[in-house]
Image (cartoon, rainbow, N blue to C red; front, side):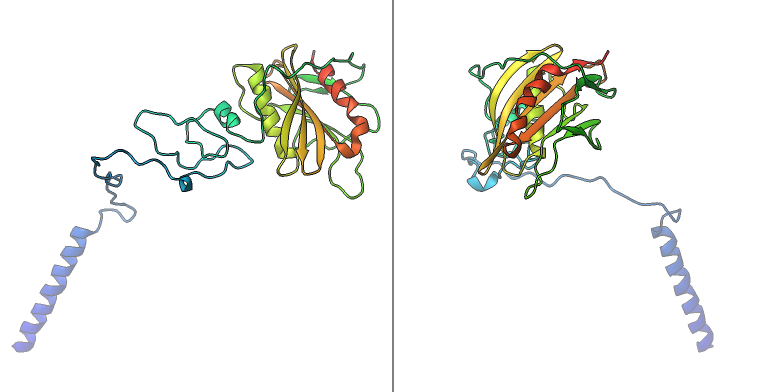
Length: 268
């Protein structure tokens, strides 16, 4: 009889465990029981004044654009004005990021215009940007365009990977309300195609038909390039960009920068 009672007790225990498992497990094999995600508790209020941010809270602005790191501490409802080399909080505009970039000086009214030569008769058509741009004379030659839509280059030189380049493409940055501001952002973007540590010095700034033109010097170490951007509305969903840069090792072709600045037209 003892053996029978022990057997019944074991059966009862197994049944109890099975019931418990049924109650705990979800009704379907793939069902996930998830609760709401809550934010961490806020720090208790302090009776003293809010602490000022320490220097360790800011980090250098990366060369590729504004930082997405945390903003410096500020009173509720206040926006901290960005300064060169500081972190930028999410929500700052592209122009505020530009003004905080130490590589790009402020464009003042003292920057002069440049005389624009008569455009040539030979053009390259860019149907994606809606622009027609000058076909530069030799030693320039057409080259594989990717990732741009048209591309002309100067011959390679020994001892350096730098050479003149003239490209067009739809605007690769966000368009601004002012063509001048859009051109400023485009010039800053072109630093991605210059040596690391490059800085801009403005040489000319002026409106062109349907857009804006900027000419500038890009310095890096003991060397420099001359460059220009033309931002123009070609009737597409985005404005078109023409960008030319020539290093000092090929300074004989610096005169072609003026040809680009004066020769960009709407395709038609």
